[in-house]
Every structure is written in structure tokens, then in C-alpha cells.
Amino acid sequence: MAFEDLLEDPVIQKYLHELVGPKGMPVAAAPPDGEVTDEELAEELGLELNDVRRALFILYENDLASYRRLRDEDSGWLTYLWTFEYDEIPEKLEEEMHRLLDGLEERRQYERDNEFYLCENCGIRFEFGEAMEFGFQCPECGNQVESMENTRLVDAMETRIEELRDELNVEHVEA
Image (cartoon, rainbow, N blue to C red; front, top):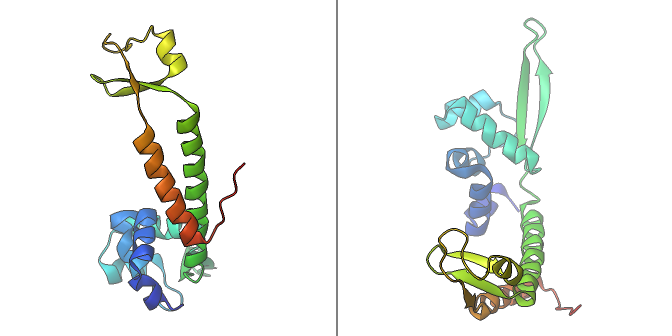
């Protein structure tokens, strides 16, 4: 898939935005063909050099950019030539979705396996054991904590888990 096609996808735009943030998004959204220096990008995009370097490093850490170093024979200065490698973004998004699915399944199980109590005054939630340790009183304000129903939360997680499974074409396997 070409850069242009990838960058028109709102999911991929959001993924890149989550990685590099608003200051780095112009760098991520305008990958040049071939190699480019950080200084050239900063000048071309009208950005601070540090913001460009930060975005490039984040892209590098996520295997979406690579660089090669050139040493100037006269000055000894290093120049970094950056290349954008967005071909694997769809696979990286799928990996991220699998991590999200695993995390949601773990959290759902935690919510199912525990009984919770809530201090309505402070908004602090306690597991049963913690609530019992505190005599069913909030350690912050002293108010009594009340049993908390988390069915809506578990149901919302189950809905999202099913959506992710459908999207990833993953079968449900009960442990």
C-alpha cells in the first residue's frame, strides 16, 4: 500500500497521531520519498528541529522509520538520513489490536472475579478485601463504602471484545 493510501485511512492517521502527538504529526503525515535529513524536514514543514527529531525517533522506535549515518570528512559531523517505512503499519495495527483484546479479556476476568465497593463521596473503588480492611469505610473521608455493581462495565467490555474478535477474525476460546 502506498504512503498516500495509508495516510488517507483515518485509523492509520489516529495511530500515527497517538504515536507522535500533535507536534510530530506533520512529520508523520508528510513522509518524503527517499532519504531526508531532520534539518530538511524541519525547514520544509516549518517546525522546531527538536519536535522533528522527537517524532523521527518515535517513528524509529516503532520500526516506521530508519536512518543511516554519514560522517562529513572535513568537519567530522554526523548527518542522519531518514527513510520512512510505513509498509508494515497494517500489521502493527493488528498487533496493537491483539494486545488490546488480550488486555480487555484480562480486565473482564478481573471484574468478574472480584467484588467491589465504592466511596460515592471520593469516587474511590475498593476490592472486597480492601473494603473489609478499612471496616467498609473510606480511608480518605470516613464515609461508608457501598457495594458496587459492575455489570454494565463487564457488558461493555464483552461488547468491545466481540467487536475486536470479529474485526481480527479470532475465535473465542473459553479457558
